[in-house]
Image 1: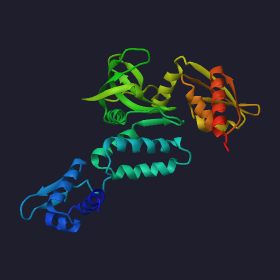
Image 2 (image 1 turned 90 degrees about the vertical axis):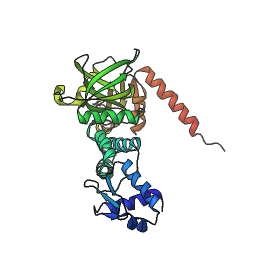
Image 3 (image 1 turned 60 degrees about the vertical axis):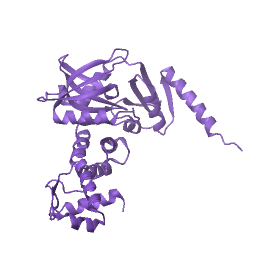
Image 4 (image 1 turned 30 degrees about the vertical axis):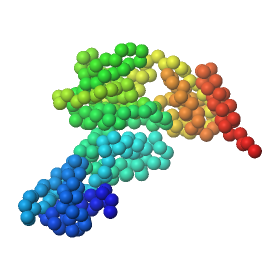
Length: 318
């Protein structure tokens, strides 16, 4: 029997909350007293409160509130599962919303208390706007931000704004928001005394301060809408306009609220403002329909080069 399987069996016995003599547990698990003690310590490291009584009649008992078996995951693995299931449950993976929401609830219930707290923070403190693509994130940073949002605890971190020196920020974190392929932290900046949105991939070294705060009212009451409006108010590098030969709802489902889709002769027209052309490129690849890039010329050139590359790569050699 593997160590993980043995620990699951051990916890299934302890979850009855009866007192188990150490000798009886050793016999049932077919392990030595020393191995049993190590397994008990592993459960404690995972956050389970197991009381021990020493002596000839010594044994173990699980405290109330620790009834379910654990998933043996570390912090980053738990956060990764939460992010993946939360993304799918929000509709970013077609057809997986309901299934992912059910799976997310079950996985959270199976978490040891310490990991459940971190994982639940990510799922409960995030507002989503569907879109494809991704930006690599530090799972540890994301987990700390999410838990601080949920616990109403002030944060400090280093923030690297584009073309600027890193700055130290002291904020009251409120919500995490996903827009397109990026994550943002909506927070009240204590130094600047105003609301700010921070790209999570530009945040480093976050630290909780232990200072609790009373949550402020988010302007407009919608964190995702506030962050999105702030991003749209900034000058974008590219104004994208693409004509699709398909019904508007097909493109709208792919783009979500990030772009504007309007009916046009023979199909629909997509308009969006972006700083990175990889975003519209992924949309063009994801919508199974003919299209014409009306602007910008840089996007049309990217599409041309990608098409030529695909043709070369798809050529069959005899």
